[in-house]
Image 1 (cartoon, rainbow, N blue to C red):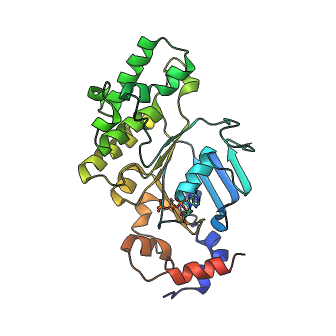
Image 2: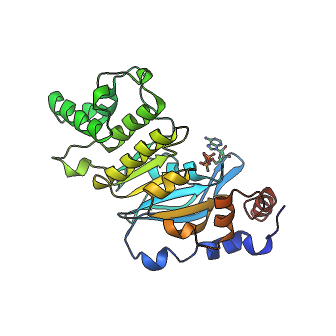
Length: 291
Ligand SMILES: Nc1ncnc2c1ncn2[C@@H]1O[C@H](COP(=O)(O)OP(=O)(O)OP(=O)(O)O)[C@@H](O)[C@H]1O
């Protein structure tokens, strides 16, 4: 049942994007999504989304299922173009999808289901981009793959195939693949890492390993967005948290403010209560208010 309908409709979403984050972070934005709308067929998923991702900051993107978090990552990466609104990468406006223009920011994405090539070894998976580019001799690529596998504690698996690895191991391999670059060519390092539920389906130990890796790779790429449902991942990996609801940002603050804010969306999300602005009555009002 919706108990707080009038002051939590779309018009108030912007107000609810609390200034807790913005007041304290006058950093340059790596990514700006401005008034972004995106639908799959008739289903509107991003609904006037405004979001900035700041340099040097790890942002956790949270929200209930189906609220558009993965779609937001896909729009940031250029895998999807918005129906309307702007995607700005260091001020440069994306006009075409990633397949047609790479853009001003090197974005690497770690997908929810590792997305490794089953027919390729771990070496071939992690070195895939460097092997395709053919700029480096193969023994140098092997060295680099080994080095980046060490970062995720997976160097012993270099000759293995994905089917020989557990889910958590596959995720660590996919992390190595996302971050690998040639240290002699600074332009090959990722500028932004996007993680889609990196710890989903993992036991607590495997989750902790992934969370440590996410923290540790911040020296390679200090700016990241992590979509997650897991509080341990939020606490261990994020500086800032953005809560989405029905394709909009409804709260934006520092990770420690999750515990103290009285924002009703955050309070309900944190408590897991069925009562509050995240419930289905509220969702219906939101949809009805937006043709
Ligand atoms: N390719 C697609 N075609 C049609 N509908 C899609 C597609 N991708 C996502 N959707 C729908 O869009 C909505 C938002 O999906 P999205 O994956 O962005 O949400 P999410 O917040 O990441 O959800 P979850 O936390 O469950 O992963 C969902 O209802 C989903 O079913």
